[in-house]
Image (cartoon, rainbow, N blue to C red; front, side, top):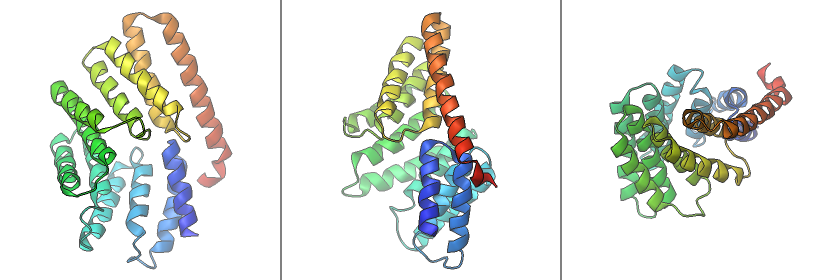
Length: 249
């Protein structure tokens, strides 16, 4: 039952429906509280943290730290990397950039020194570092990190490429380079369309960024198209939330 609840919550997370993800994930964690040494506990802590990152960042930070501590306690030095990475994301979003980069650099060292680490996992860390540098306004460093990530990826890395494309677009957007921003954001959107279960929150963010760039360039006819697409996506997300409304009870 806990496994089923974990998978359900993770599916909601992947779709960007975080408010619904937290309910089954909390239920799964409650079941596993009777067996705290179960190796699946850190994964549930991580997933629950992901679902609460926007609504309850304080609890999220504690969940990430606990997940990492459990892995380290069992001498699983590669396994804490997802928790450290997500802790870096949380710190970056709160403007705690030095702490964020420290988390990312720790993960990067572990993954680069671990034989057989898939390139996309290294690229994912570099992508997060690029976003942190972007928020700091260090655009040259941001481009450097994201370009390193792109060199590691190929067309088969369909789960990671859209995120990296989107980061590249956001760096250009924040730097006021709107034409380049649109080019990369549209690559991100095209990549997400090819995914079987795209992250809807990330797609919304990409569309919102595209609209900002188009408006600043005065490309009003394209703004209308993007806004219609965004409205349709939000309506889809709302219908999905209504269909899953029983979870909030």
